[in-house]
Image (tube, rainbow over all chains, first blue to last red; front, side):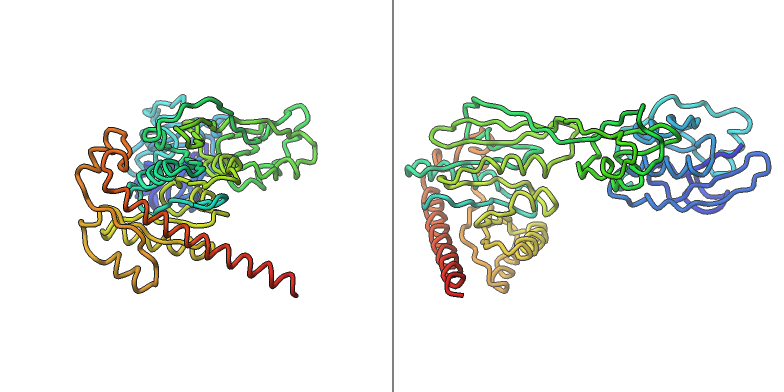
Length: 122
Length: 301
């Protein structure tokens, strides 16, 4: 399955970006083949609505799950409307996060874990 | 003071004393028998009422229009989400989500919808309260918690400016959209600052703003004996009038902290406000002359 991981950089060694809406990049990765592509997040510096626009980007990428640090209510609402599974409080490198996901060690989040604007200016 | 004049009390930096100047000026002028109106446009955190202590007798809710989607009509084409610049409406698969608080009420989504599935519904963003503070006609806006449509509410508050009064507008701090909305169309802007590097930095931003908006303005320096002389040097170099200097007087801070009006408790400061009044009166006369000149030129041409 294809999953999206928020990333501070463009490789699998990059750290998971703790922000969802304003993450530097989204790494869209196939968990079977480990093939991936990088989407630079043009909403990282958006004035507002970053979470919603980023959710749209991830949904359009065809990912079925999102691994990130923190996710606010607007992004969470958008992702869940599209039926994506959400995993928050993920840390470490992107590769480590994918391994944790594959081994079933991540717990699915059923709601936002932070307030709106949590990742602004951070 | 002549009637029908609108003064905005603004500042780049917050906490410089806008409300202190605005409420004291209103109170002082009302004491002289002038018809005064005080409008608190710092709607995110209005505090003029703490000092003027008005008796509020009318309150009205302010609403803005936000989209409501009829999912029976919606075809899921996604055009509404594409046009929205604020992600306030978004089409996810066959589902349309709206985020009302992000909406700026442009109506774009409604116009591009080919299925006529979008209607407008009112969203309550805040309230305007009206009352009397002694002889002062008091108006203030209060933005509801969690709402961000500050300029929309300020615009509504300003619709209540009385033409037969000297209207004093308490402007929010900064130089962003709410400030632009609050100073727009006023006759004169007083920029309150403090003689510190922060005060100077933000004063420069505020001066750029009022110059761009072509509004006549002057500067008030509060807590005059702290900091350095850079603010005064800047004003001199830029040919900006500094029309009032309030000292860093502990008694002013004490009066402020107990919600009292300085000109009542410390009568020696009446002189400062009297001079401020004189300056504004002259400024108004100058502006009126220019207006008359413009009208005459227009009639002659």
